[in-house]
Length: 344
Image (cartoon, rainbow, N blue to C red; front, side, top):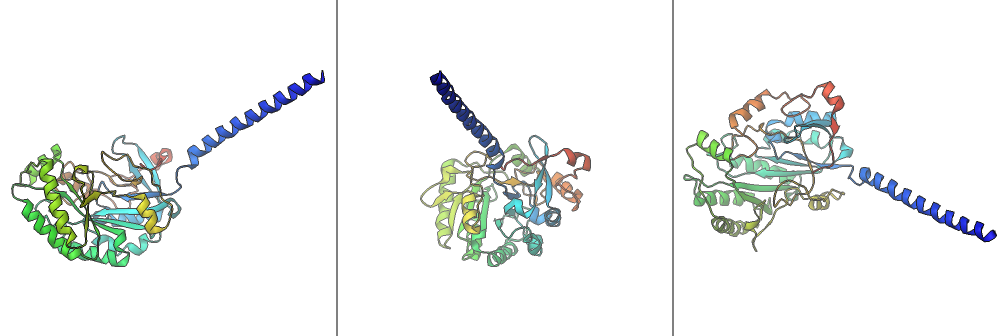
């Protein structure tokens, strides 16, 4: 009889231990689903539009409010994104004209001083009607590099867009002029070739007398390699964005939002999981707070605008006090909006 009780005691104790173990696993998995996502996120401002050029007042207002609403361009669902300093690991800007933002940097730094800048300068006014003169843009580039560090700003010469009136020789000459003025202020230049989307071809035809030059991959590799050699004259290394066929001993793969590099620069922990942006993209996760069809630069090759006149109208309609780009989310809708999910 004693043996039976002993057996039952051992059996029950093991069963209880197993149940505790399973409970621990279930609780652990449940908690990890909530807490394995970093509490702070990289804010992208923005791949979809030029916030520094056209919406810098709006951006500062949203930082002061501590949040922004973002409409997903594919699902059209509206999310609330926190801009509380505790939730922002870094801000990555994208622009062709930083001049309107420069006198607001101190205000922005109240949220975070961990700022990174993508600066597109091509000197191709024929295709970018409302962008500043490249010499003016380069002066702003130099200002940012001096205020922060050349490590916190990168030159983009993209997309490379050759037409029947814009030969590679013209592009190369302009590239070299820019590179000469940027020597010592940058070590990297990101390039890509324009993609002949239907809207790009339509806008070229509608707004210019240019026709896109068809290039083979071999043509593009040759031209990119030539630019890489010229860039080296100014201590600049070329990186290819989503154009892996360009990679060579002189051209490396770009990661436009590089969590590992940002973590090194700012000495903080940053999400380094890969983003699901597009094919051949090496970016890590971020939350983009921009909106398509709102950039008024008038670049005819732009993938973010369906039509440059429509984008200009959107920019003129925007109220700097709105809580989102392109719209103002009502209190009723705001009350049921989801919090922005993990960065993508």
